[in-house]
Image 1 (cartoon, rainbow, N blue to C red):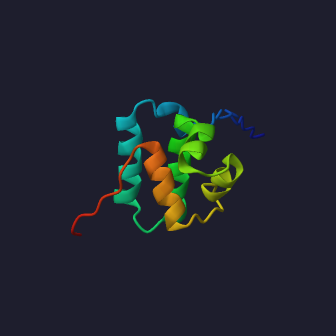
Image 2 (cartoon, rainbow, N blue to C red):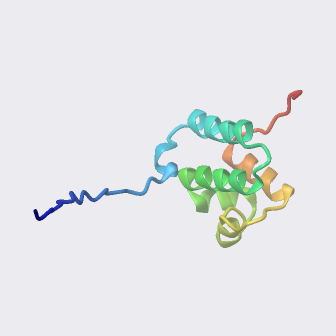
Length: 105
């Protein structure tokens, strides 16, 4: 007896999601950053990327101008491998119109 097998080859199609395209209002932007700060408070790189997502949603050139930074240095600081100074984070937060706050853990 000859055995045959038929394999179904279903390809999964993936699409990339750009979070920046989903952040439309200042409230959504603040909620996104707040979620990062709440869920991953020790992930400095992730929080920097989240700031980058919000900056792209608002317009990187405008955020760079408002923060007093060059567009290129802002992209670099908020990239996956970036390591922005706390001063840069504060400038970007101010430019984005968001405030960082603290509460007892």
